[in-house]
Image (cartoon, each protein chain N blue to C red):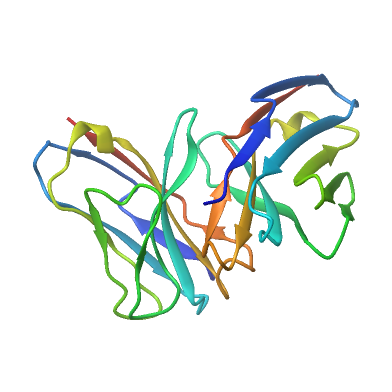
Length: 112
Length: 113
């Protein structure tokens, strides 16, 4: 089945700096890659997603890039703010696998 | 407000007892999922259902069962709870399955003593 690896497990940045979280996947049939943000004690919530026919997608300060050849995708947060502090999860899915596979999460801390 | 409702919010359960976690959605999503979240292990899939009347096993199905009698409800049952089932349980749904985003409930924090 699919194996999703996520790095780093923890990340601290100064407010205003950029943060990058990277994920790799193993199943070449994976075609949908969502990212979720989970604040402490709350549920995961979708922040951005990308499909395999697109290389990059941007939504204000958040962007995701996908390299299908290398089987990796990354989350980029620019101009970080304290409210960006949370755990971020990447995921990959394919219809052959019939489920989402999650990375183990990155705890992001934005230092004011 | 449309969404997913989980109950209870939290529960302390004695080992060996039977417990059903409830999950209801009103978004008419076809697919529903149960995940457990443990520190350092991320979200692991227990069981899923692509449509009413069908269910499938995820990554960690042992000790759990589910049913999907209708579109809206997807209960998760622990037949005989064990301490290793102490976790936060999230129910989720998606409109069409693995090519549409997951919407999560608020979770159930379960402690098995």
